[in-house]
Length: 368
Length: 143
Image (tube, chains in turn purple, blue):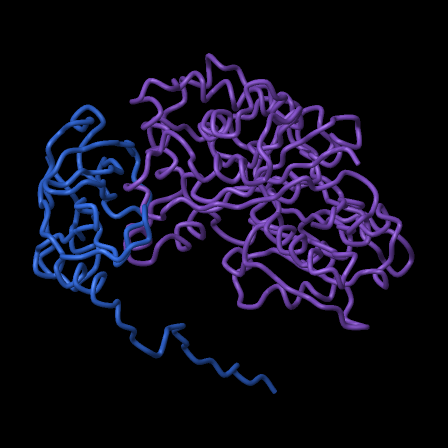
């Protein structure tokens, strides 16, 4: 097995589309993104950027961070989703952002960029390519993201009913409550902690002081979940440069497992696929973990399934304050990389896809 | 000279039909005939909705078995304020329902207020008058 290193990272601060009504903290400033212009860097607000410009900004930043150029890259892999962009083959347009000449071996996954990173890691194991560039972008602001996610459900048994993501997460949350494993106050505590931590994180760009007692006074949207239990959707992009036998935090293990898609056939209070993916990636207890959460109860399920009782979880605030579809998983890898660069011995990055934590990808990073 | 723009209506649609296969197809045909079908797995359990393969083992399933149309609410999530995209426009709940004769739970909606619906409550399917072989042939479950 070739040892693969995360040698360079680049990302844009996610642009949260709507500051949630329950946010009571300081006024939110729309982030400005620095992108290359004809006369040098320009500062633009996210709404002014198209996909190729977002990709250009983050891939250039990741290559510069790695000390490499496009000429060094042997394989490019990206993650995005046509459902979110609202047009077919949308990733082809974004390729403008990485340049088309000379041509490179290239691939794309209709998934989060963390899965593109997994493909790139496998590709580097072939031995003929040493450097891979991975990127992902997502613009939830282009449409009603909840409805878009409903359309991606099982076309026969789920999509005809159109359950929004919070309805399915509500059933999972209620299963936890029924089993005596969690309370609504536990969910509120996860949310309040995430937003408090996000206030100190450069890349979250939005923060709020939530008062836990008052949070429970809000009405449920899909009981027992309230609006604040769902992650706030945002726009953004991220890129990573992987180098076989390179420098920087090394990938100790990476693995992906899936639960059955009929969730009436599985125990919603736990995540067997997360447990199996963690074990397959190498297992053990990380010092720090960055989780891809789309609903607060998932924090409690993953803490148990990934064995995180002793770990520092989501010190950046994680994805509840700003979840960029198709990008959040890759930014978990970047956050974990920065923890290892900052001195952590071992960091876990998690990515999920599908309803109720159906799919789980676990990446373990260690100091070189 | 101002010319009116040429316009044409276009409906995006698949220009083909596809078969749902012998198991999911039978399930949907069953709904049209007011019957809910499960599939029996190699170890004797009945999974609903019917699937060609047992998700636990990956083995092919066997006979189709009629279940329901009544059952018991296993997990429930109440919606006080239906959105326009929800299947019903009165207070309702998303529910996992353990249909009579089934060993797994089935997702659908149950009409009723948060006070009226709870875990363990018996509910039964209310069928749509005009049915076309889809999950919406069941309008909702009701107590």
